[in-house]
Image (cartoon, rainbow over all chains, first blue to last red; front, side):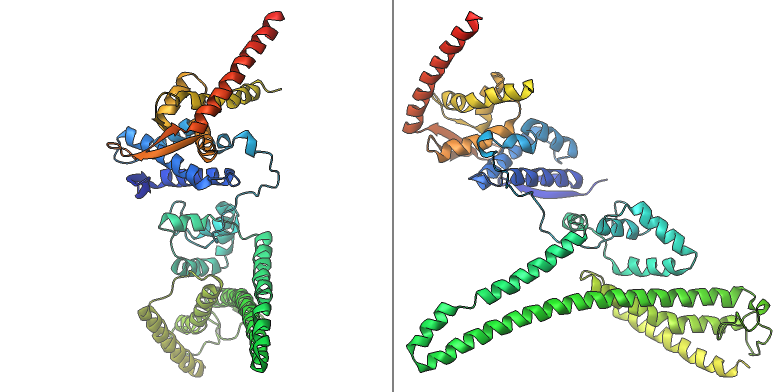
Length: 353
Length: 109
């Protein structure tokens, strides 16, 4: 079973398989890139689309599959074939780049569990196998299971083709970040340049009142520029904050799970007081509470774990704009569980000896 | 020297001449022009044709009109303009001269 898309080529409607669509889309894009400096590029592309539509019609198939697209490409030729020699000596031709921003999605086409690792792989440009290995390695600390679960909840699945293209878009490398910063700087600079000095001066000549108009123009432009800078700084700070919170909560989650495991399942009594972590004395013979100590440990895990979990969610939402959000019911449920755990924890803390 | 490259260069050079020649007696749309050129083994892939047609049109040697077709996309029928006819005559002369020149040169050796 395959998903199909509907496309319009020269006014005709075609059903096309998703993979075939991606291939065709890529093909047309690279032709566009090759014809970048050719006059009448759009017209040529329209002619090519027209011809492709004709070839598809001749096939008389209800759905265009990747085989048909490949056949069309063989007939039409590689993108390089479209460039006639006269236009070629233009060494400064810019390489074609997609301007679409890369987004973090889960990849449903390459998933073991939820497609989180392959999604991260697409986003960072690291082979998903390595991402999976890292998650597996961290599994022994217990954290990656929680972290994976969180990511599974908040990262949306790439369902539509556009989302898949976004997912595989430009990698978030350092040079891209540099580009982003440069671009932001440029907009600010252009804003400053665009201060309509001439216009303002003309106004100024109109009379004494004009002077204030001139001043106002400059101040207005200055404020726009400052606003841009501030929003840019705000965005950067937001991301930075997100990274810091994620790091902190990860450490916190590691600490909580590790101490839970040690406290609950390892006999710390061997090392006695030295190895004893506060509150965790499951196997400890000093335990004096009237109930099984595992309840105490679980209440503690939840008391600290739920806020850490929520912080992680918030941080991820700060970092990636397209993250999903928990529904209100889940939030209230989590809050209720947390409050119960907190009360239990406090009560048991006082009654344990 | 890449032989394929040289062959392609030769073909490309005369392609415009051939397109204009094919259109001399009849109006055709892209696929029909392709048909002629493919029969003559002048074209390997179709993609090369479209930028050429647009260039000839922009140079006002060709003009086109749209015609509806049954069951397919609308077709762009190309016609020679007066300038195109004159241009073709020029090219034909040059071609005959070239042909003569090449015959002379190759027969000598």
